[in-house]
Image (cartoon, rainbow, N blue to C red):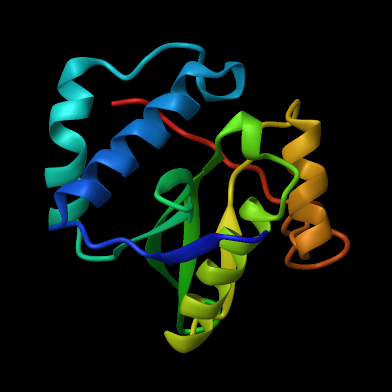
Length: 161
């Protein structure tokens, strides 16, 4: 898209911090993000938490001076491959800018970073009912994870604490 730039965010830059908070809050307010704004405590703790987490990497997309997309990623480690991995934890694009390649550009930036880190894979989670995102992820090469054909796909579980 003309005028679009994608870059790794500087978590010490107040402009980048504001863009991250704004875009993640926008995502949280949408049905697939839970449908509610981020609580004040989360807004207050997000940037310090991202800065303190040792494997955080965030990519921002801008069109001109307008922040239009974000990918919040965290590194992990695959014991089966004995290599690092990169998880795209949040990927969000402003609704009025969707369908213009911004999400793809953010995934490409995450993939390039993962390759440079020597990662064995790029991972993400997506709601089963989010057909639009699933289609975009599949087009980019993501598929349900299966270690062997006869064991089926992996499921993502969580236990709130």
